[in-house]
Structures are given as structure tokens and as C-alpha cells.
Length: 119
Image (tube, rainbow, N blue to C red; front, top):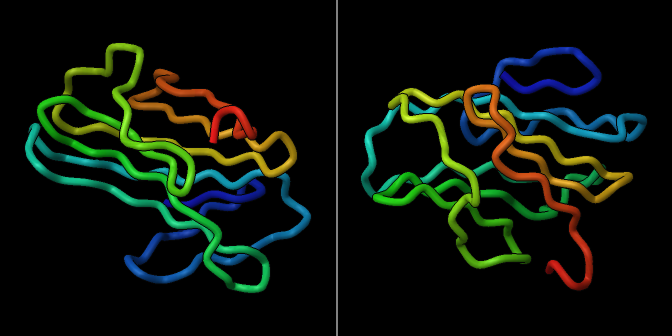
């Protein structure tokens, strides 16, 4: 599910979710159920006019990595991820703070502020 302003919405692959300009953050919840292999999960963001604004990606490979589109190359998470094959991911982007936060099975695994030095 996708959540904005505490209103969950069912996510449909390749369908844009509604934009709420009054919300300072967007949160996406998704589940991966994969053993290590060459798979990836993308979450794409669009602005209030429907134009592509970037993406975040998780690579599920021998080492699980993340990428912030137009900002970073793929990087390993700096904390140990839960070992369960099924992982529930919560990814939040805060517009006001320009912050991206990843949780995996309830454990915060990334918290980064996008800035000129970070991107």
C-alpha cells in the first residue's frame, strides 16, 4: 500500500498515485519476497503536475543495495538488514526536509538528507 496523509491507497504497478501538495511527505510501503538474486524494486516520484521527479531503487542481490536516482550510485546499506526472505519496505520522502528514509521490517536502514554535497 501507499500512504499519504494517513490515507492508505492500494498500489497498482505502473499507475501514478495521487499527489497532495499540502502533505510534506510521501510514504510508500511495499513487500519483497525474494532470496538474493539479481532483482530490483523501484519507486518513482512525480511532481504535482505529473512530471517525472526521480526515483529510489533497492537492489536485491548478493549484497542488498540502494540507489537514489539522479543522486547516488548504488550503495550498500551501512546497517545489517533483517535476514528474512520476505521484507516489508517503508520508504518516505519528506519534501520540506529533502530527506529520504528507508525502513526494512521496521528497522531504519537509511536516513539521508539530499543536499548539494550528498547528490
